Length: 218
Image 1 (cartoon, rainbow, N blue to C red):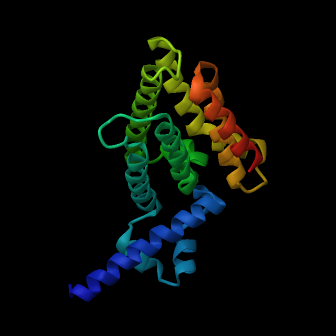
Image 2 (image 1 turned 180 degrees about the vertical axis):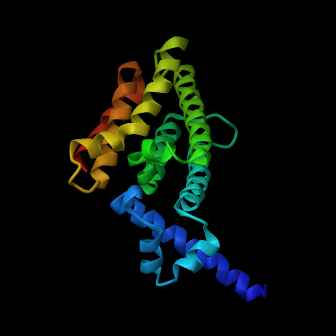
Image 3 (image 1 turned 90 degrees about the vertical axis):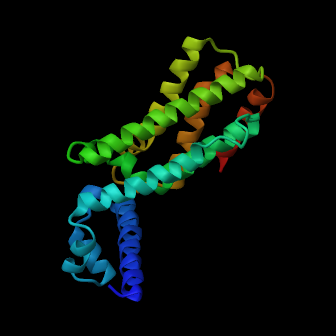
């Protein structure tokens, strides 16, 4: 294939993923068909199927992009030692990624029942999130900014990731006829902070109060 054609093919694949992500986020993955994606892009269904055999292939590709972005958000600072602000910034960046790929969270159970590739990939993401959260808790304890036993830190890591993972589903069930807005993700970020708050002290406790005001009043 000529080089120009290869670039055109890559751009078509990118356009398909960009539009699919937007439609999945706005209308839900189960309610978005490949025919709608092709129509919105003004390409033939055959052209779409040339790049992605079916909708699950599109979902798997988007989940791969999600994993790469989440890995970047969860990566600790160079040198491996984070200060308090670094840890909270990491949480904020994580929720930004969740918001960008919010369809995965809102429609997660439906997607997992039929897509084995996403099932394996998402489990890997959750494990990475728990590990990063546990590391953050241990760093806070080492800095004297958190008081929690090893058992409490393990429970905190799981609980924080559970809330982050299922918050948008909770918001959707509460108001299924209302579109999810950024206020929903801010409330989720606050709930994650609130779980950790009873264990915080010093600068981290003060920062929690500041961030709580930001998330709830924005």
